[in-house]
Length: 141
Image (cartoon, rainbow, N blue to C red; front, top):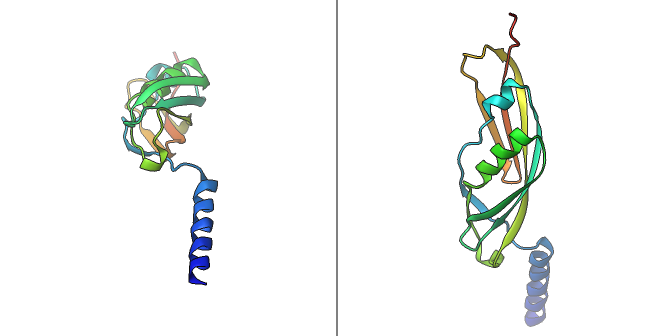
């Protein structure tokens, strides 16, 4: 009877792991995302969707931006290239492909062009990054 219980427990646990798929990699390091000054001055905001490929060492080997404003796409792509991951043994494959979304928008606080902008970055996971900055006041000249 204990053998049957052990086998059933093993099968149940194994099916739960299989149903969840491979474990996600863990983001170990990344540079802080930037909100490009030109994009902020032009009041460009939006969402950038990108996909990237990791090698077994957890290094980003390629990045492809899928959508979003051009000035923000470049910033997101450059940031993703700085990411370094830990890959769990159960997820080891020659290449792992993932998607991420960067959301760029304004805080509602208006500043002059010569003032220092604040940047707030929120990382839900490597799948969702939010960058919020101050908005420049239009020139009254």
